[in-house]
Amino acid sequence: MKDELLELKTRVLKKLESVAERSDLEKLRQSYLGRKGFLTLLLKRLEELPKEQRPAIGRLANQVKEELTEEFQSVSDSLTRKDAKEVSALDITLPGRRTPTGHLHPITQITEEICTIFVKLGFQVVQGPEVELDYYNFEALNMPKDHPARDMQDTFYISDNVVLRTHTSPMQIRIMENTSPPVSIVAPGKVYRPDSDISHTPMFHQVEGLLVDKGVSFGDLKGTLTTFAHQMFGPDTDLRFRPSFFPFTEPSAEVDIRCVVCQGKGCRVCSHTGWLEILGSGMVDPEVFKIVGYDVESISGFAFGMGVERIAMLKSGLDDIRLFFENDIRFLQQF
Ligand code: PHE
Image (cartoon, rainbow, N blue to C red):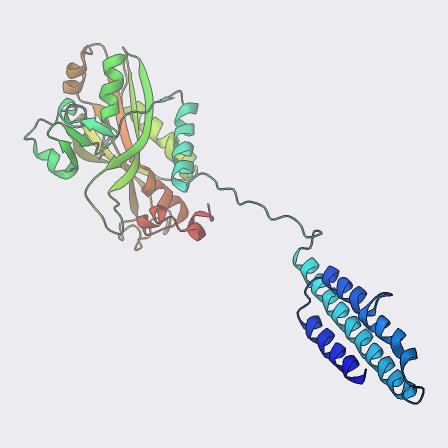
């Protein structure tokens, strides 16, 4: 019987080692220490023993029972600790985790800001194709096939007559073709040129503007663009209209604002000129009016085109245009 007791103890201890669930522990307790358990039944058989053996075996039996009871308790305790850990890993009182929501890209934000200013001045927002016919991108803008002005705007050709537009100016033609004057539109969108460096990306954004009516003068162009610059960069911003050339405007002017970084003293951002170019503009060339069938005698108009990235960079003091398109969330979140 002594051997039986010791063997039973070893067996139970072994089984306890692999218990992982409280229900298994309870089953094991029932089958050994329970009312009809092995140990209980064994103890009942004490009476069958010769009298002189009973005390010693009885002591051993009690000792085994005590030891096993203690072991059951310690396994039970460690299960409790494990449960507690699992509960704390799943703390239902913690606040929920918010799914991060994005926001508009900084370039989209600035595009909307630009358009909003012109909408308040009475312009209408229109959009057109990025894959454009050579005719709209060049030809109808007074840039015939062999015109040297095309060199400045070399582009990606889809086929001989289909290109990725190099500017938003084709929208001037598309709108005038379909509308009789007066016309006042702004056309935001993507444009493409094969340049890539710190201040050029092969894809960038422009906002085009066109206003055609009876008696539109260069004064109207100046007033409109000055109002725009004051709204965009602040009412104290100085402007400079610099004579320039575009095949589809005559006369043409590039517009600079006083450097927002050094206030005109001269710095790296403005290449020590004190001025920053923000857009190209001019009075619509009569040749363009003729192409779309407008009566050059009774109307006139102005047009302008600005680079959105450039304006965004000036507003936020950035010096590398590529940041906008690297999609680094740490950069984008700052807007
Ligand atoms: N399309 C010209 C460019 O991309 C800008 C421009 C637009 C100039 C309208 C004059 C009038 O450089």
